[in-house]
Amino acid sequence: MEPLISLKGHFHVFPSFSSNPRTTIPPTQVITYRKNSIFTLSVRAQVDPNEGSATIATSGESVVEALKVKEWEVGMFHNEVAATQGIRIRRRPPTGPPNHYVGPFQFRLQNEGNTPRNILEEIVWNKDNEVAQLKERKPLITISKALGNAPPVRDFIGALRAANERTGLPGLIAEVKKASPSRGILRENFDPVEIAQSYEKGGAACLSVLTDEKYFKGSFENLELIRNAGVKCPLLCKEFIIDAWQLYYARSKGADAVLLIAAVLPDLDIKYMVKICKLLGLTALVEVHDEMEFDRVLGIEGVELIGINNRNLETFELDISTTKKLLEGERGKIIRERNIIMVGESGLFTPEDIAYVQEAGVKAVLVGESIVKQSDPGKGISNLFGKDISV
Image (cartoon, rainbow, N blue to C red; front, side, top):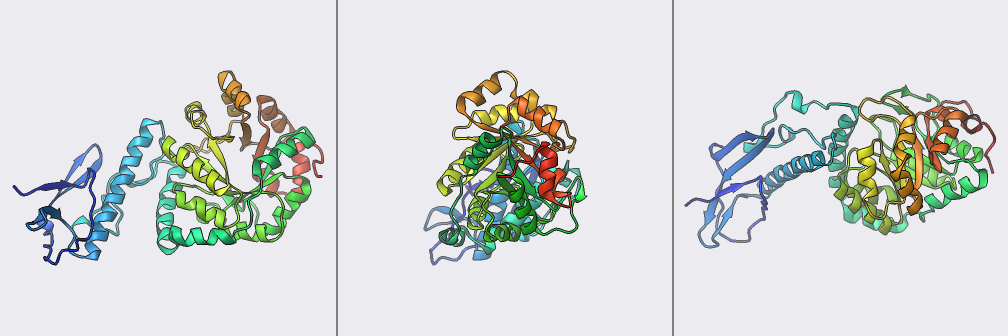
């Protein structure tokens, strides 16, 4: 009986070293059907009588095609797993493989399933394509070799603790950010090094540097420029991380810490990435914005720094009471027992805002808009805290 291979299952395609010719799969033998909003491709394969195994690939190109389809299906499985953990952000469009698939796999339905449901999902879908292209140009083995030339890692958490002890106020992670999807351009006259130096002079403990180009007008070049300019504050690579490759890339560019967003990453991804961060010496700032995400992250071993984003990442609405709500009761007790540093993020514009989240239990704050828009960002820090916190 002619075997049936379904690409939905545990399917692997390997080039054969047999001298026997392979038979191309005619497009008529490809059947598509829909199940649970995910396309499954069933391919009837030819059997090599000498090897007794089914074969699909007829050339290196067809192997690549099949592997790309499998990669897409893995991404769909990722969406299913994420949904079981309350993650509403889908890693990629659910209704068909990307447009560049060729041959019998060339299809893409244009309907509401291929439309991002919110700005975060749009960013993640774009990042998925962006990272895939970067990985082709700069494979992990190349990045790993570059790590030897990266500047030494600095203690991100230690800097926050020291600032908190020195000032009695939350340690400041000041953000170098030119724009955002919700606010547009924040600073026209944007010199990342000048801004970073002003932050450091104004008393910032650490810096956050946006590296997303399309939506935040940031870049890894900005990160490198700041690091190479002699700024001593540890640097957080503020990026939408969806792949472990990005951790190695960030470290190779001089990052001391990275952001992991629980609204995007399933538990297994966070666990895996936290371990890689420790191997690389990076600090992982794990960001949550509701109770379910917070509980998930508290169940992950090795997390030392958690950020509460007061901005709803789907609607971009702000509510700084989110920080207080999440740190009340049993969660606050667990945080204190484990000596985890909590970071208040977004919606912080006044000394009253800082006092509010500090009373709720944060030891650090991440602030961008309210200080980067000031003509002198360093003085903007004094206005934010209601006093001079410079060293």
